[in-house]
Image (cartoon, rainbow, N blue to C red; front, side):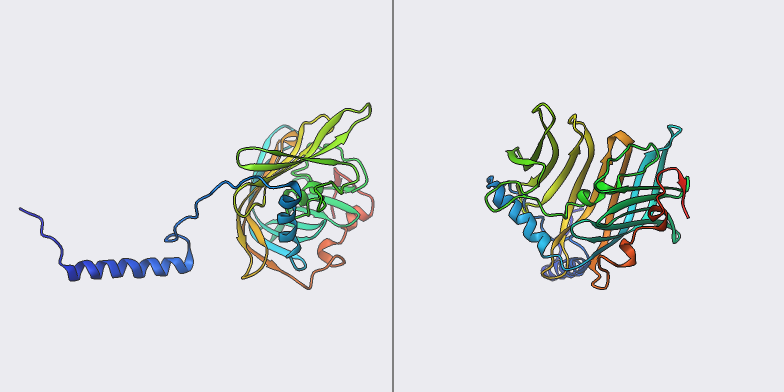
Length: 296
């Protein structure tokens, strides 16, 4: 039996239905939107590359708030690997104020924070606090789920310390640029006693639009990775707001810890400032407590 050819009217009706369904989907997703080709751009100067990132960050008005889900793992003092899946709420105010509250059923399981002077971490698993000052040295406690002093850098939302001439404005580092296949790497180099140079920080910028931060790497004085973060899926907040990553993954190899934050929504909260309770030093840290001391 020969297949019959659909009538022109039926074909038009089917096409119209498909178009209508696609239009509805476009209101809620990108299912029917043709993906933008990822075209690698020609390298630009270090000053121009840093300027693109810094202008985007400068367009942030006040404190940012992000909500989403957090997945990760860390090693316990006994050497066991503990995984978690929690709800995350992040407050961030440039350049170094952060509060990252990880909860389940409304109960805080982990809390990370930083303000102008101090940073801290609370882990409910063993009811412990870890507190530190920005000008002090950081030990490597085994039961710290993440490095709170490096979470700010992991977001990729702090200005790159490069002036309009391409020179480092950081007091400890000089900066150079290295171009690879899909990235322009900004390398911050410090001098060790004896004159030996070591790369302590790396910021990888995409060579395709929107040319923002893709990767951040912190290294110790021996060049070993302390922390690295990967940033993905940049989207604009509002009609003319900044481009912000919807996916952020941080990894601390020495601590055998990692953390992935999938953001559902970014917003600004103008009522939260540097002196707000969100960024206040916890009483446990103000009292001089540190890791392995009970929290309150």
